[in-house]
Length: 471
Image (tube, rainbow, N blue to C red; front, side, top):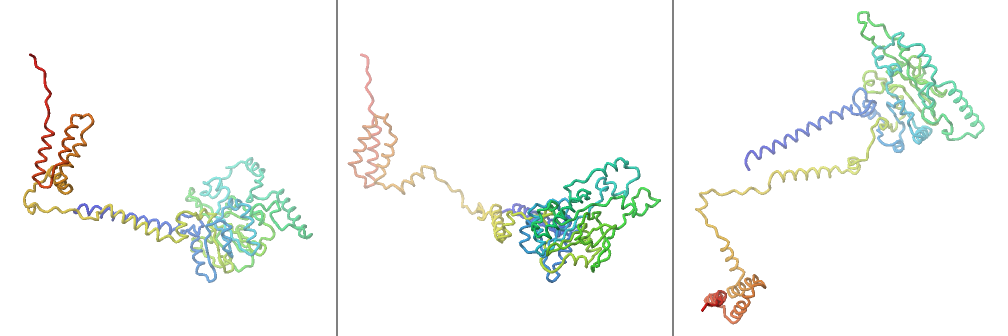
């Protein structure tokens, strides 16, 4: 094989290997960083994720952290001691199905723990006007009094558990709670809490709601802008959540979210408040416990590194056991595809075998297994070699397969096959030649040659027709 034909496949294979190597390295870097996953995910290693907290729990004796990528019913089959919902959006907490609400409620009543943290939420004015986030305060006179009256007169949607409770809703809830207490005293209370109207969602069942602070409330705590730079927005003051109870927790915790809790039932204990509003609450529910925080910064990678609060994190972990971090609410869910089956049934060896067969097939098609024919030099041929024509080949073939005694009958039989019914003038000749062959001896070469001439004479003996002549 010539040199160029060897170099080109080698360079192509080397380039292909380098391409897949760099591609694999790039994908590994993305997966190690984890920025392809949503914020608050335990698979994310950048400041927005919670991977540092999850991996730190792996070194705690008696604690077994795990990730949940399946449906809630399948996750609860693992018998977790605590179930974590990190970065659960306000809208998603009201989107749990009735079966999921029942399963979570039963799980907590039987001794389980549920820890819920909400993502960082902006104030209402910042969400309505993104430019307000940079200004940190709304200029005076930008909103008319009629708009304020119109906004205050509109009641919040009744089916939104995060909306502040109106007087009518408060009266309805108090009446339903009083009805429940009277039924319990009489011994005829229903064991199913879903029989009550306000138990359609988790927030209604567990008795809390959420709201966000207004930017006007924060304007008083912001420092004034420097007179030398009127266009530059003032720096945003750091909000600290203050411990309100007697628990052995940190007195101050940085709080990044504008979310706080409203319409809390009396059974809730407020652990931390930010700007006099509850932001971390806890209550007992049956044999279990519920902990809800309006922010996830203190449990994120950034918070664990810069503002670590070990006692608060230990309080969230709770007693030793299985800690299950749900990932399905963040959109990371296990799909039962081909790779799932490969991993489940340990078919990695089959994948490697198929790759090996593919490489062998490529090698077979690119490099021939049989070496090419090397023609000898012209000086070793010994001069020109004359070939043989088709007649010589036919003679050699006949000599190998037809005996001398059978050569004339065989030839006559082959010639007779070409005679068609229209050749009636040949019938007499064929009869004469067959009779001659039947009575002749063809043992010696001389007899065969003599008989051949006789047959040829019979075939060429043509009788010319007589022509009439004029007298």
